[in-house]
Amino acid sequence: MRRGSRARRTASGAVAAVLLAAIGAGCTVGPAANRAENVAPAGHTGGREESPDDEQPGSDWWEENDPEPEESPPPVQPPEPAEAEGSAEVTEALTESLDGLTTPCCVAALPSGDVLVGDAGTSTIHLLSADGQLTEVGTLPDAEGGLLGLAARPSAAEGDGVIIVYVFVSGGTASRVSSYRYVTDPPPGQSPWGGAETTLVDDIPLGAAANGGALAFGPDGMLYAGTGQAGQGDAAASDPESLAGKILRIDPGSGGVPADNPFPGSHVYSSGHTDVRGLAWDGAERLWAVDGTELNAIAPGGDYAEQQEPVYDWADAGAEPAGLAYAPASRSFWMASATDGGLWRVPLNGEDVTLVADPALLDDGQLAQSRAVIPGTDDGEVLVLTASGGLFRVAVS
Image (cartoon, rainbow, N blue to C red):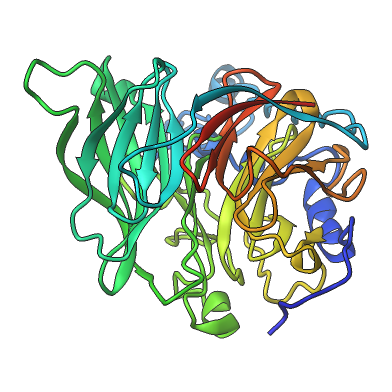
């Protein structure tokens, strides 16, 4: 098994080689390289109308009906390298205590500025309004193992005032990724947590530990879910038929497999993972993950049980990664850690998948035992949830 304590590393030759090969001459890695909207719809003939049977290439019909090929979207330009050092300053305590929650685990920001907060211990969802009021809005059924992850996005298909909320929840024998409708302004007496659960992916292996739980939307609009080995080891994590130790890429509307996934007919985006607890995209739309104690840059179809060198490993620092967010103004990732102190700054090179400097722990006070971190409404801030139930707005650079 490849995991374990290692000397800290700021670059990964193996990962860089894989990703730079994929990048090639300016192509991006991850969702920017295979966007769903670039997939030809069913029945599409490559932009060319069918010609009459008696017409052949070179005829007048072809000259009139053979359009110029569509240009590919320009590659996303990587940002400038981050500064080697930065800062994190708590600017507002949205709340310093979430009374009634036993184990605050995850958060999802709503367009209104309100925040949904999940409780792993009771599998309940609470709304923290902008004025600091906390209200329970929903309870997840068949969730004996607890809530692991939470994400939300507005849904144009459902009309104004409805947001689709996604949960990664563990039942008695397996975990699943599901969705619920959340009504922002329900009629009097009606719960905002509307309708039945829609299961997108189920039968995700569940163990005593290492169950993953990361949920995040990519720049391609697809839903990504990080799972864990769940005690089944590297063999299961590398097994394409198992959902253990994977990053999954899911159509958030139907739960189906996006047509441009690396493996046809499979939700698997990458494999060989130990315990994926955070997913985020950098300024060049490359996917990164915190997996166990490691930081990895993720290539579509990659098997990370075979990879020997992570981009960085927090094993020696005693950190327990619990989330990952990108703040564009800082050109850095921000990692929540549940054990050592709180919030880590991870300065990115930008041009490739290396770091400018070793990650630095910037707050071991108010943000101690951070459980989750998500981007804020400003490019230079993140929101951090702590084990004590505090939710803080943090200016970062």
